[in-house]
Amino acid sequence: MKLSEAIRSFLEHCEIEKNQAEKTIVTYQHFMERFLEFAGNIELEKINLSLIKKYRLHLNRLEFRKNETLSVKSQSYHMIALRAFLKWCIKQDYKTLAPEKVDLPKIEQRQVEYLTREELERLFEAVDDSKINGIRNRAILEMLYSTGLRISELTGLNRSQVNLERGEFSVRGKGSKVRIVFLSDRAREWLTEYLEARTDSYDPLFLNHGRTRNKEEDLRGEFRRLTDYTIQEMVRTTALKAGIVKKVTPHTLRHSFATELLLNGADIRSVQEMLGHSSITTTQIYTHITNKKLKEIHEKFHR
Image: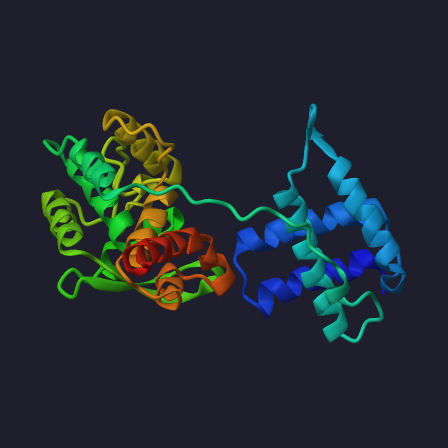
């Protein structure tokens, strides 16, 4: 089978049989088209270690912007996509290179940025809650920290999904994986205050209150649903107002959520489940937190 035909079938498999997110499929398509451009429309059996080594060298030298080459992390993503493709090929009984023979570039374990309890309180208090936008912003910040939601998960929420009485609700994350998240008492109070201040019946949990549109054109309020960018900017400007010198994003609050759990004794498997990570390896970026705790225990009890 030709490479181009196999790539097309692989992407269809990802969409139909694996039901992967559109963003994942688009990413796989981009990476595999880059491999196709490099290798040419060859037969699958011609994919071998020699070709992979040359491709790795090509990626390492590839200039995708002026005087800027691909990072090691980006190169790794290319090889992950290629391994997924080869794994699918082997399952189809196509003769080609075994996926386990494709090594991934070694990348340094990233250190996560998180906020201390004192910084979090400064962030929350920096919000001007005298108007509905401020009440909404405070509810968003409290929810991000209370639940560990990804920003796309937060912006996609509808009012009907959130059970304020129980203080918990389910959310569909990466890979269409469903998990339960929990609201702290304070997050629930701010969210309740925000929803009570609204006079509309729109679906989105969080609205852009500056936008207006003919109700007949947008009965469900999708036009006014907050975007990822709007929330990112709100978090950034609020952090600056609070005098926090770190780069603060919605994902920083997700990191802070996980860090707080670990520092207070939660096991990493539970944190993995609450974050919606498919693999424990992803959650292990927080091991520097547990290592710090081990050091404190050593200093306290070692004589």
